[in-house]
Image (cartoon, rainbow, N blue to C red; front, side, top):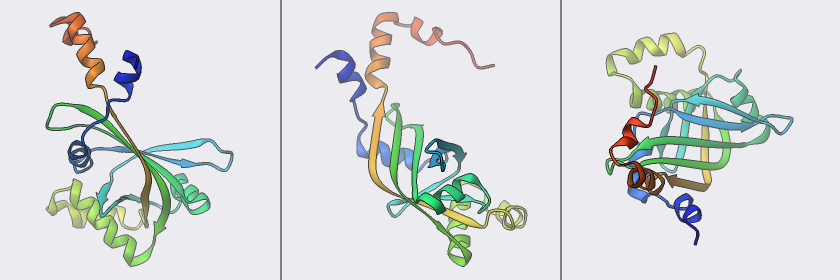
Amino acid sequence: MSDARRIYTHHPEQTEIDEVLGQRLNAAVGTLNADGSVHLAYVIFLYDDGRFLIETSSVTRKAQNVASRGRATVLVQGVASTGRNLMVSAEGEGRLLEGAEAKQAIACVREKYMVPGALAGIERAWGPIDDVCLVVTPERWRSWTGTLLEEAAVKELGDDYERAWLPDD
């Protein structure tokens, strides 16, 4: 196996994937537009009971795309406690929850990200707007980590590897 194939097919452990999916991170959700192109949006999410829950409004393109085509992909990038940076992608069925079921799911998503004292105010502000919950049930998973690629760079550059990156502005 070539070094490139070995590096780009190096997968994280399931425990690392589960840990990253439990973190308070943004995810990118991709849905299919009518012309076959992909619509991407950053979202907050909850991965629970084998599915992703994503708060949104029924007027958003992602909600309309899921209602029309029933497919979505979620991509999450995070760092596991092992120190490994990894990406997790889940493709699958997308559907919308509405009404009381949506409100309950949305409350669970918000509880992951917000302090309890802010939840009532957020509900008053966002509740009338975000009226549906996008549910993605994964059928296909992909995951990868740049660990071996980073190790190759560190081997070559040593301590200079950290200084090789431009600073954030």
